[in-house]
Image 1: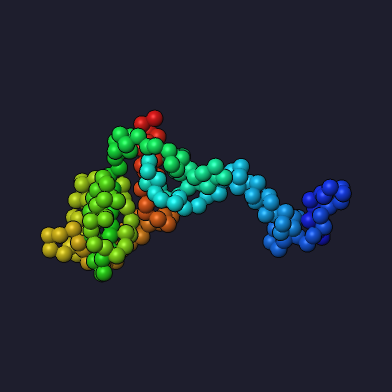
Image 2: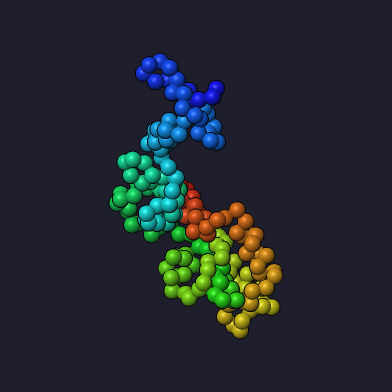
Length: 187
């Protein structure tokens, strides 16, 4: 068919040129109308206006009626029971870059911890506690800077970080997923 197939009130098809790249034979205006209908029914995935109060995720779904976290389904603006939020503990080993050095540390509250540490970039998270952190310190000890948690950037450490980052666009989304899983396990 050469034109838009949407029937008009006259019973004839719209006939306007099909939008370039359209997956079905619809003109630009009818594609927009279909998009608006789907967006209202299924929502549109986008960044939340601020991190989810329940799980910390930045990924949300926008509906005409408001926002919902795409990870834990908390409705933006709803009251969060702080006891539930505080009780969700996910220990992580974090990898930070500051200039040409990398810090390997651990925290159960990485947002607060990382806010207190001068760094240029959060490179990765690895789920684990102090025991895993100590193993990583031992693993990369040859490049440790004194007795600190800072290390020279070197091939072995960078390869480990690359492995942790594989398939992860944003470490905070991974952390939010882990928190959401913990919430789900608690029922």
